[in-house]
Amino acid sequence: MRPGEYRQLAAAAVFAAAMGYLESAVVVYLRQLYCPEGFAFPLRKFMDPHALAIESLRELSTLVLLLAVAYLAASSWKDRFAYFLFTFAVWDIFYYVWLKALLGWPASFQTFDVLFLVPWPWVGPVLAPVIASCTMIVLALLLLDSKENPGFQEWALWIAGGFAILTTFLADFGRLILEGGYWKKFLQLAGDPRFREISSNYAPGNYDWFLFTGGEAVILAGLFVFHRRQK
Image (cartoon, rainbow, N blue to C red; front, side, top):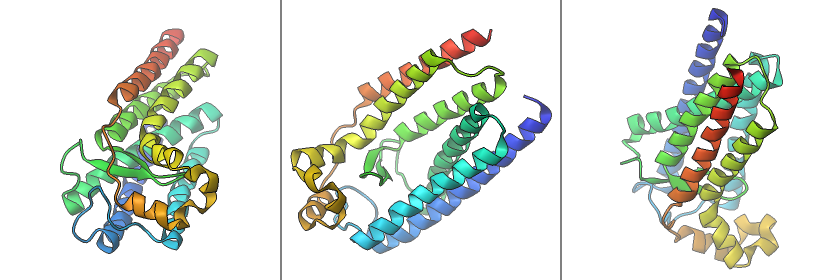
């Protein structure tokens, strides 16, 4: 990368870190409203459908902001994808850095968190998204340092690994939806009183570290293949 690109990357990192603070500040307010005694599973009190819709759209808007920054930061789709990965990962890491500074939370890397809400709550220990974010930063830097586009093999490995990791986050509440038959009225799920009651009293089970590690390994294999091809 040229010196100017390093400055641009640094500016993107500053933006993402500041955005992470905004995200953590919103969570501080939400926890004061819904978890005044501290955030932990089972949640006991779940957002009402209107607040949940607002929060879901706010989360989606953060992705739109990151996509817009990535679009403005580069001219090729490869580099735009790299900037999106980079800013997303820095944002995610600093989100937990700021929460630790503001609330003293999480207590450890094994603490479970609600990671995202769309299309249903993602849950997992804090360590998992942090590891995934570090991998995303490595991938982003490798893409930015390369003049060639990734090939089919690399994309296949990255998508497969990412899907495996995503599955570990979606599994807990996905299992609730499938086993309870709630998929039949998925669009009205947030307003279903029975599902809200079950969700409020639900504590995630053991996280699937085996599948997560497998997904990471597949992504790293794609990184290795791409790096070797550049040589």
